[in-house]
Length: 117
Length: 116
Image (tube, rainbow over all chains, first blue to last red; front, top):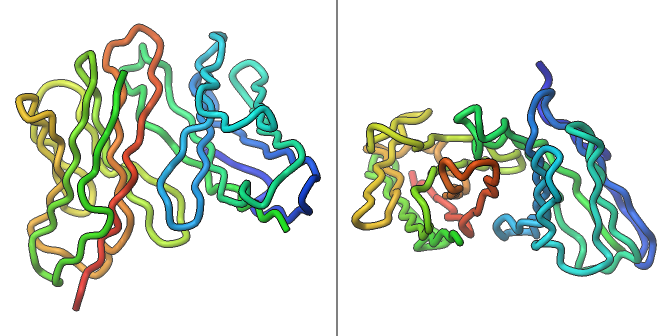
C-alpha cells in the first residue's frame, strides 16, 4: 500500500501566522510520531500517539505547538503564532503496534519544509 | 528511560575503507535497536534492526551491526565504503516488550563522508 504521506510538502508563512501540517500514516499502523529536523541537525522528538492511549507530548517545545490524531488515522500538527525559530522540516512516522513484534520500526514520510519569514 | 549516544557527528572514510559508526545506548529494559539512513534531501529509511535472537544483524547495502549487551553498544559497520554510502546515519532505541509503550529515541546522527 501507500507509504506515509505529508502535506504540504513546503510551507512558507509569515511570522505570527498559524500553520497546520498533515500526516497520513500507513493504514493499520497504530503508532504515529512527529519529529522536527532543523537544518543540519538531528531528529527532535515532538509527540507520540499510540492507539487510543493518551499521547506523549513531552517533546513539544512550547504551548504554541499542538497535535491531534483522529483514531488511528490522520494527524495534524498545529503551530500557532509561528516564529522564525520554527523553520525546519517536520517529519511524521508511523509504525505497527507493539504486539506485532515490529514496533519501533518506523516508516517516515517525506516531511514538510516550513519556512517562517 | 532510554537514550542514545552517537560518537562523532562527522566521519570521513576513503572509498573502499572500513566504515565504523558508533552507537551506545542506555535502557532500563531490554532494548530494540535500529539504524536509519537519510540520504541527501530524502527521508529516513530503516537500514537494519535488532530485536531478539542473533546479535549480529545484517541490513541493506552491505551494512551490519552487532548488539553487545555488556558494552551497551550497537555499532554499524561496512567492510568497504562506496561513494553512494555518503549520508547521515541515525541510531535509535525503543524498549522491547514494553507492553504497549514504544517511544523511539534517536541519536543526534553521524554524517558519513566518503572520499574518492
